[in-house]
Structures are given as C-alpha cells and as structure tokens.
Image (cartoon, rainbow, N blue to C red; front, side, top):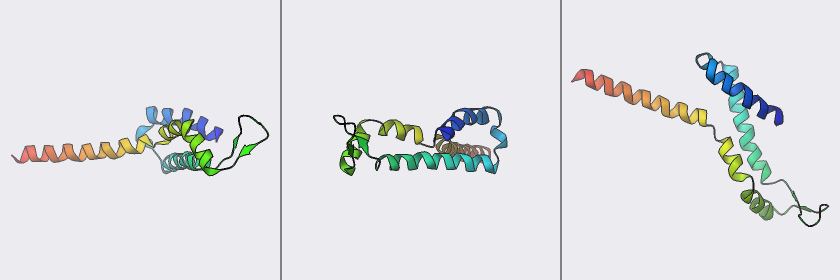
Length: 110
C-alpha cells in the first residue's frame, strides 16, 4: 500500500505534467487499479479491529464501534483522497468540448 501511495505521489504528477498526450493503456490500467485499491482500503478499514484505549492488549471487533471510530477519525480524509478526480475532470471536460462544438456549429449555421 505504501509503495502504491509513493508511486501515485511521484508518477501521477510527472505523467500529467509531461506526458498528458501519451497516456498508454498500461498507465490507465495502473491508475484504475490504484484508485480501486484505495477505495477497497476504505471498506477494509470498516472491518479492521481497533485497539482499546484503556487496555492495549484488548482489540475491539464490534463492527458498529469500529465504524463509529473510523467515521470520527480517518474516514473523510480517506474518502476525499480516494475520489478519482482525474476521471471526473475528464468526463466534465469532454462534456464541455461537446457543448463548445454544438455552440460553434449552431453559430456557423445562423
């Protein structure tokens, strides 16, 4: 998980900055795989036991208590960081290009 995180922190900005036009199938597959793993990590964290505050030898395994603890601590940070913004921007960007082409065509038809 740490290796994947470091790869995303280094490779993703470099690829977007310098190789945006040359995105290969391997790059897209790596990006999809890493986004999926980070989203699965959120689900796994809802089922991972937590150490009891009073007694370090006791592990809480109650799913409701685990979920409550996770929602209060790391959930929102994990969720925000796991949203695949590149695909969301790509979808909206293609929609804007389509709208711009329609406006241009309608402008020339007038």
